[in-house]
Length: 177
Image (cartoon, rainbow, N blue to C red; front, side):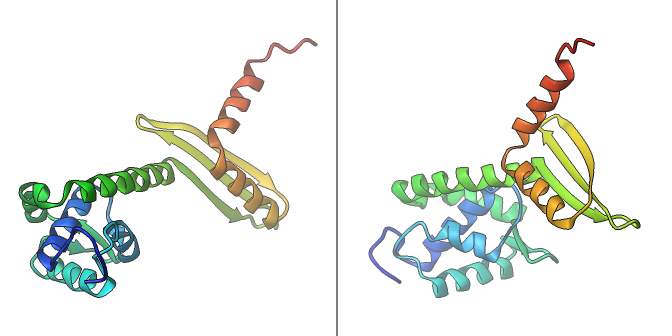
């Protein structure tokens, strides 16, 4: 074990990994699972790696073709049973980290951008914003340079709601001829 903390053995690390996997809203890569699990100072990389591999081997977790980890039904059942074995302070820290991570995952699902080069050398920037009910906005813009396309995508990613409200405001303005 790495240092002082509340997690004392590999079984507790496995409980924590299952706890996390059951609460993350979509499959995650190794690095994300590691970051979320290192919420206790006593956990080190090597113990974590061994435990994660064991959970895949025992079919508590599944490693997808894309290299993402997701919980199985067996893992979910055992997570429910073992959750109370995780020290309360570790669960609180873990829940806080999961809340932030799940927020980022939801945001990434809801805000999408892509750039496509057109035959004439210009670019089409596709911007979309979704909510829990479906599509809120799909917008395609033509720009003449790739750097402009990247700038539009970046700005949209940072504040899609602002663009949406500005478009609505502009379209609802009462223009005088």
